[in-house]
Image (tube, rainbow, N blue to C red; front, side, top):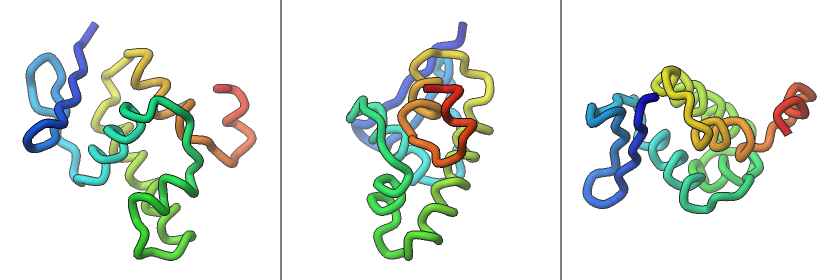
Length: 102
């Protein structure tokens, strides 16, 4: 199994087995860091407001969806339970399919 590491001291970065994982936005790393540090479920509205306070709620939520997609694509190889929890359980979904994960 691959080892995922999230570094928050110095420039924030994600590494897989010692190799830098490229994500195209700093907000994607910020989102992953926030979820890892708080270790609790967050609503999409809360995360959208936290990360994009200058946007209206509709635009902020759309940007959050894109950021989650960026993380999903960048970390597709990771099967760790932590990542599963971060991206599936700790970001509350509005859609009915979310109930399958809870």
